[in-house]
Amino acid sequence: MAVVATLTKGYDLEYIWKQVDRGAVKDAASYYIQASESGGEPPGRWWGPGAKALGFEPGQRIDREQILRKLVEIQYERNDADFNRGAFRVRGDIVEVYPSYEDIALRIELFGDEIDGLISFDPLTGKTIRRHDKVAIFPKTHFVAPRDRTRRAVENFVSYYDY
Image (cartoon, rainbow, N blue to C red):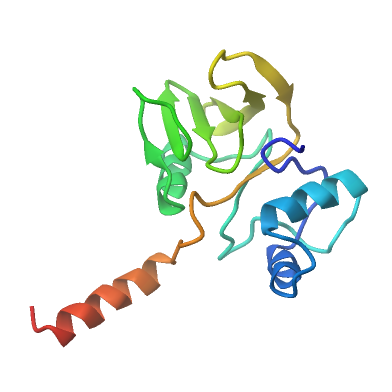
């Protein structure tokens, strides 16, 4: 099984969702796994504007706070005490994410505002499993709505009920 949807080439998220919709693959995560195992290469990048998956690679410049905000946007919860599925924790310049769809966790090592390393590890023992060139982290649940859509829904609700 691929680890945290490990990728070696670029992938277009819209193309993947079309494959999911037409039933060619079970879900986007399995598509990434199939594509990385078969060497398939759909065109484009896999972390563009509006993408629901977060993409990371060593050397990428990104602020730690930006990573944390993006994880919260895709419904991961910060929990430094009880590290379980669908949670992340922060220890200095290290962000550890435990995806809800994997048995292993991902460690994002930062050096300033640059990703220094991506490591998958066993969340129970802490043992390193492997280093990655590129990873994608999918939302905690399938029910992730963009912030503007959520804001519109709340405004509609408030205006409907005259709060």
